[in-house]
Image: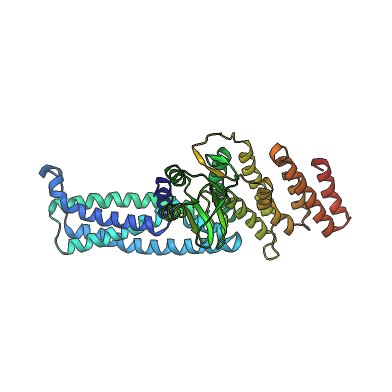
Length: 410
């Protein structure tokens, strides 16, 4: 198992909400038990006698209040996730679950609650000596300071969490990381593909490729003297028996099993290695805004601006021709696929929204200024104009769209 696959799994583990909460809970237990070592750390002249009753009262207040705050915070988060799923898209709500500010806040509150409970129990059983109670008092002051700081940040976060504009920003940030990385390394540090080899490779399982461990695949190719050309990319769907790659030689059973472990299949698409997924999620937010239930073309226009910003970064990054994975061949991303991910859904749902169609034509004009996307953007603009004509006919509203399109691209 390579470092990159370990890192991918560790990164996914850290983003699960229970993991930071559990870590803060363990830290709370450790802090309470650390006070037992006070006699080894505090000299006789450097502590003040603190009664167990006074410290116990503070800890009881801490435990009771933190339980209430934790419950309130979890309820608020669940409501925000539900709002994001209904107003934006369920794919975006998963990013809210991974929000670091929310996870730290919940973790701090739960950890403080656990610390208070353990401290109260330890005081009730007379575990602490005089110096231990003093150290427990000092730790409690530090914990209270952490709670106040976290509450201030959490209150500020609550003013935005779950709002549609904030969801769009979170999705944009997640999409930017993967799309800029793919722009810098279009072939993921491998050779441009595809290349035809005689031996197909299938991977068991049905679902999306969340991660392809190219570093481990390179190691196996060097060790067993073969080359591999990938037919899929992160985000592709794996069907039973389909060839995900082709190899230059027949692989033995052990090597084949090791190669298959390089492909991580999941139930849902992820943002890490899949630059197209973030574009799709943004497009789905725009489509949801254009639905009859919401009827918010302004949000669709905002989403188009966000997509244009991401594509401009994607097209202006200088690609690096570094090939460190010389035994692997990787497919590039087709410009037509990217435009389809971004705008097909909104173009189809907005045929009767003149303002959205006009903005779409202007966005496509800016994209067409980049040579690699000129043909795809021009063709997309023509198809969108034809779709508008079919929906609106030759009325004055269509003429407005056509005037913008003719002036821009067509």
